[in-house]
Amino acid sequence: MPVTVRAFAKINIGLRIGAVREDGFHELLTVYQTIGLHDLLRVEVRRGQGIEIHCANPGVPRDESNTCFRVVEQAMDALRAKGKVNIDIEKRLPVQGGLGGASANAVAVLVALELALKKPLPAGEKLRIAAEVGSDLPLFLLGGTVLGVGRGEQVYPLQDLPSIPCVIVTPDAGVSTPKAFAEWDRRHSGEGSKLTLPTASDRMSGLSCALSAWLSKAYSGAPPGFRSRRGRAENPLLELVRAGIENDFEQVVFPEYPKLREGKRALEHAGAKYASLSGSGSTLYGLFASPEAAARGAARLRRQGWAAQTTITLPRRAYWRKFLVSSS
Ligand code: C5P
Image (cartoon, rainbow, N blue to C red; front, side):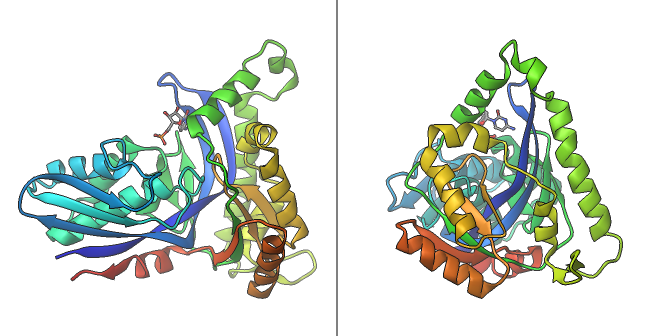
């Protein structure tokens, strides 16, 4: 029985890059948030063996380098299952876009495979497989608002927040994440930089304090939509970004791709309450106060020549409710 699922994208709301670890990865602190934009994946297990990936987008690899491939290999082993796995990807998300498209695809395939085989894997086992294949896979096993630590693969579900309208701008550029990390290291390993730049751990604790203060408020029993200083109820995500959180990747990606800095400014001018690069880019997003403001903002951006689309942040319950399209 083929199983069709939606692989929703994520944005990063704040991202701090910390020290380089012994394994070469960087310590990371971020808040992931799933959004409504998605790819569609159809997974089918037939008689035979092997893995076949079909996708009309030439930017999507069809061999072992595709994260779906590696996840299926591990999942079939863990499930002690046999068969030929066919995966059809209808690509709608940008490739190398900072929205976690490839990782979302891999996790969607993992869950679809369990459904197709009618064999569930323990949650811990799925998280292990996801983390082994890539740092930003595990978040998609939770969905909603997710705290990411370690190299980004250690994930903790945060309180489900009401959705907020956003506008996604996808400039025509693919940013390589390993290259962005390498550029970060180059800039932060110089002799003098140690004197002028805050140390990695100071910078991490800055975001960690902002997050902690926000979380303690969120868990204090205040109803969703805290009171702002002006007394109006406000979406908690807007409260979080008001704490001044940033995505460190902007420091290395914007100088190399000035168009992306322009995109962030254009989002701000189009009415975004907060605009940022997602992951290492090239996607930019803006959070808006209302669906009308988001629609107006996106229209204005499109008139200026930006590829802009509106969506909403996707809380955990909606993420799972909309995940399965069909299983026959
Ligand atoms: O884990 P993932 O495969 O997504 O990582 C891709 C590359 O990004 C890694 O090989 C590494 O170079 C870099 N990376 C890193 N620190 C992280 C996550 C990724 O240096 N926390």
